[in-house]
Image (cartoon, rainbow, N blue to C red; front, side):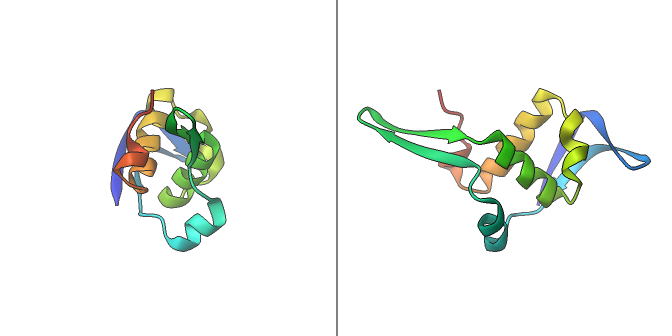
Length: 98
């Protein structure tokens, strides 16, 4: 489980959430949603391309919140969630790519 403190609360029903707790994904989650990144191989090497829509699907599922509640996330909070989600897939996947 990973805790992400939000810089700006999100609304869930009548409540404001200031943090999200994400459980680890299961094999069933990966089969349903897919990987949150693409591995791209070229003549010059290999790169990882992040898939923000897939990251948001994981964030909603793993935090047990409706996807619509994540629409008001700040970009910095999206980046935090992205780092946590990618971290579940290994250190290499979580490392920012330039």
